[in-house]
Amino acid sequence: MKIGIAGFSGSGKSTVFQWLTGDAPDHARAQYGQVGNPAVPDPRLDYLSALFNPKKTTQTRMELLDTPGLHPTERKDNPRRLAIMRDAGGLMVVLDGYSGESLTDQLRRFREELLFADLEIVTNRIDKLKDMAKKTKPTKQRELEEAESALLQRVAGVLEKGEGAAAAHLRPDEEKTIRSFQLLTLKPELVFVNIGEDRIAKPLPEELLKVAPTALAAPAKLELELAELSEEDRAAFMADLGLTEFSKDEVLRKIFHGMNQIVFFTVGEDECRAWAIPKGSTAPQGAAQIHTDLEHGFVRAEVVAYEDFKKHGSMKEAKHHGVYRLEGKTYVVHDGDIMHILAST
Ligand SMILES: Nc1nc2c(ncn2[C@@H]2O[C@H](COP(=O)(O)OP(=O)(O)OP(=O)(O)O)[C@@H](O)[C@H]2O)c(=O)[nH]1
Ligand SMILES: [Mg+2]
Image (cartoon, rainbow, N blue to C red; front, side):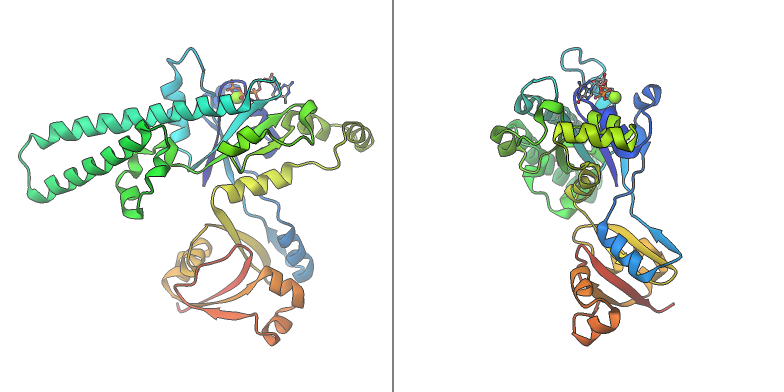
């Protein structure tokens, strides 16, 4: 899944991008969206890898897209910039938490921009469908167009009330009907506050948490600068600042999970690996990540939850204690499941 780093111009998106991916932002490329692929560090995979000692250990990776920021007042280029965000499956909204500007206000204004942009797309399409309705055509096609129009009017109603399209609670088939419009307010959103040194270890304002309960905060620029120092200097600076550890790994994990992604593990002497799947995926859908043959020929999955496995320390003991299960096609995978897929080929 591609995650768009979005926000107003100068909120620190490219700084956050560099901090999380290790790639230097290319300002020319960022105008069209720059992609980086950071691994998602997972202590559970480290544990499994230390135990199985495989030839290869493979972390899961995310796709982060640095996008050009929206301009709050000179807005003529904003539609082009919004179009770059549409390509992402989820948005990490970066707020400027270093200059002192109200966080809640920034978020409210940014959400409004997305809302207006979506409303414009939806109403344009409704108008187009109205024109199309004047033409003669087969009954089936007319019915489809009428259903689409009714659905879009429902979405427009929600947007006009100032809520994101996600608040329309679309069924999966309805979501599919309007997927091609790539509505921004339908995408999972995670708020990230790019804080300055003065906000370290301070809680985020209650007011912000009311409208963004899962909001994260970290001093991205500072951590980026500290990472470049010698170990000795770094330790001294960190002690001075009251920083005990870097938050980068934790932030990467929270972004991953905030975008409704989970991992399952495969283990063995050859490879220990973490696989990313959307939350709610079934075992065959998980198997498809490994190989489409494993999905098509799926027979069953042997599953043990990571915590159960760790408690018993080996597959043999896990089996002995009855926590090693056989699951069928409808099994919904849980975050941290260790799976072995059995397939007929
Ligand atoms: N003091 C301070 N400056 C910061 C911080 N984060 C970013 N900046 C500075 O703010 C400026 C803009 O940062 P960028 O990361 O380029 O912002 P951006 O959101 O990518 O901006 P656009 O690409 O124009 O939308 C740069 O000069 C950064 O060095 C911070 O935490 N503290
Ligand atoms: Mg930038």
